[in-house]
Image 1: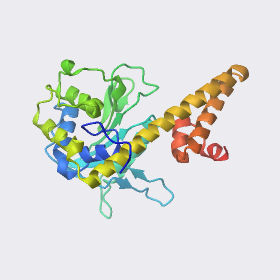
Image 2: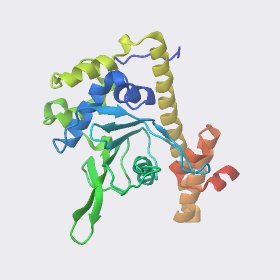
Image 3: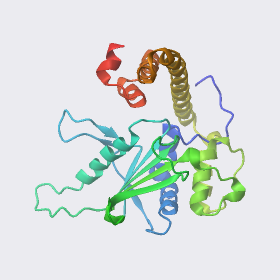
Image 4: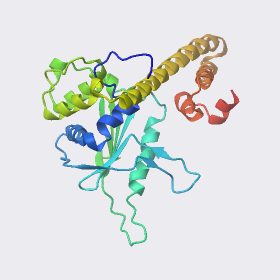
Length: 297
């Protein structure tokens, strides 16, 4: 097993293992349904979900594949895709738009006459960072296709929900709605040593039971520790690379001008990430640099 050891009582939901354990398994389907119903807040009530294949390939071999964290459909056949994003990505909005094309294309009826009627598609992003171009202090963002002149919803079958978790600041005493409670759990679960008094709903019985590390089998504990190590290493690498890049970029930027300094900063960050072994595609996402330029560093 990993040598770092664990002091937490409950898993960190920002790790791939823990998020998929809690929300992406039939055993814990009740947890996912509870979260979604709290998120939709009565606009629709989900009674059941069916998990779908999380790995999707493009229609041609050369097209990029997509691997989702959780992908399911409700009893009405509506598709729901949930992404837990542990670290900042410059083009996360683009990525979520790209991902939405897969549950849309999945609905095409092959070999039959089809009138293009679609079931609703929901893309939910739980973000452990804030979106740079979103200045609103609100953490919850619901996005639909809109008629710009009237500000009315033009198409209501495609919905994007972005949850900027760093902007959620409510304490246990300030929790008012069931959705507040879910946000509190997602943000604080790994720091809790006892179940909060405010979380008495039945669905949280299952969540805290599934999240308790002491109940894991040796194999499950090992898998979680490995996932936690990846999460911590990833955060450390990103933080260190950005700090080094900013320091060098600022120093050179003062002498060479702001625009050139920003480019130098991005290259320094990319070089540090490359030396740390991160994939080129992830480096491109973090820095905004072309892949060819990253490969040449």
